[in-house]
Figure (cartoon, one colour):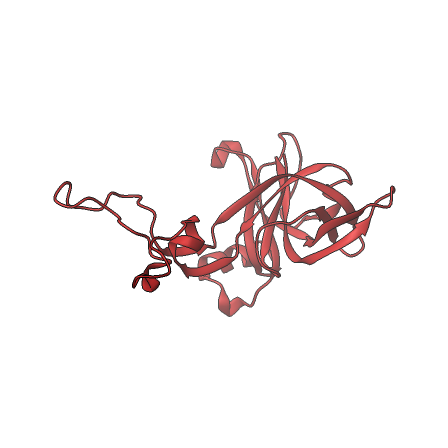
Length: 207
């Protein structure tokens, strides 16, 4: 399993060879600098730590900044680790680009979903609502209804579905097709929608 970091730019559409219109998500993928190399004898596993996007030194913690200065690299906005096949040789400072992917292959995309804020049970869990529209029930249309019994057990069970914050969680979408790779612009066109808002950072993973 290997991959790189990218930024979601938005959605568009392209025509395939048969003339069918395909919805695609445009992602700026890389170039990603190799910031650290994890080795089995030292770290217990093999992986590459990649950095993507520029960041000012004043906005980064001193331990992480020290890692960049030690390796003579500019600070990056995002750091992620990816496993790579054993036997592949990389060194700190190398760049991984979008040509890591090929047109037609299947990939996974991981990102933070859009945050919806504090929502009620109908939007968050799909409740149907309670009560009717007459007989003084107009204030109960979107209410959750009963959340527990009375005298026993005299408490609300953990995990009961109620109102709360919705979205902004890690979401992974598998089996997305790579429609086109544009190495000159560091762009990749992925069929369909990927999680996250525009300009959010995503992980492109080769299964």
